[in-house]
Image 1: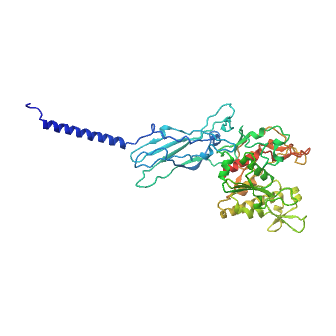
Image 2: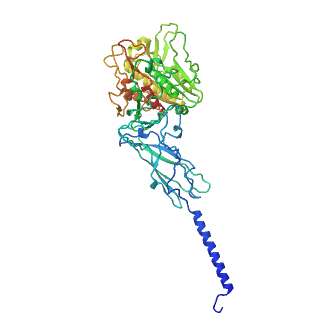
Image 3: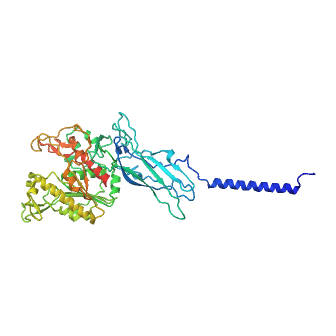
Length: 536
């Protein structure tokens, strides 16, 4: 045709069109492949393993402060966005109750709560440096008005509401720089700000998952004179109380977690009969009050064997073979070194060296990883006279009038033992030392031998809350101040529990005599061990 396109021209046009189409498709494909894929509307997905348990203990009202904790965020589960940006990793190490706290046995279950993330704050991505802003609403709980605590079939605490809402928002801004070359991505960290925890400040709440062991059981560890379930006592509401710190969380105790935390370690209680109660309480708590034939009696390793003619050994030591955890108690009512003044005389007096630690403690200290010291109730003239103790300082009888008083001598000794322990800590970097404040007595209308009573059976009749910031044992608080020895402050919280003593239900049941010094077990000393566990 005249004026029409020639065959050669049509061929060139077709070839050009095909080439253009191929180039366009290749370009579109490359754009699609290079574009970052954002997961589910830009929301960073968390593993269902991330749980929060019983966090209402973190908050009381609206004045909650915050302390600083470093949190590592590491897990390759979540997403890699571009070749140039590092993998963003998030782990469950956000609070002290980590994954090991979920699903462990030992008689106390774990609460599972999901962590809510505000989706609109998660991610703003750029081609140069992705910035991830994560807002974590950890530890938020809703008040359940008027309802009873909710528990699982196993008795695990799901939620305990006590007329207050506990809520705290902890926000984290984490930015990840672009990694260059073969540089490894660094763990993301955040700082959770919370007021420094004072476990002695808080209140008692009812918790139907308590006690942590049976008062009818635990016969392998618990002295029958302190097992009030085996006496004629009929009220046991005191067993249902749990201590809740005001400004912080107290780690939930389980035997499994305790043994894991104390694996290949030795804990030593050194003190009077209240220290022995704490020791027996801990053994019952670890075992859930069950017999454990595999637990080894290793008292002979520490010279804790019953000598001929004595009612009992100077202490006990047991080892859990699976974790090689050793728990021991040594009786030292005064925390002084006691030596016979005339060793050849069976009726000799004993030098009570106010400025020297017990020989047992100084000798075995290198083998200990945690030491809990206490003294107090043997510091009276009657006890000193009955035990034939004579005060010594610098190896000679004391002539200092100020220290000659019972109060002065006791205070001097507490400062002496704490200062000595503090001087030993640098030599033993693995060692943690606690001085436990005094356990309160509750004799009303007289003393133990003059008709004093403590037969109240209504829990918390004198109040349920401790709001003070200072310890109710000023001598103990002053002794540890400025040292690396920690105060296990149990005085004020125990003061509210006058119904928890042996009272008139002692085994001997002597008419007119009540035990308002020692505690029923299960009972108040269990809380001392929970606070100790939280600080290990």
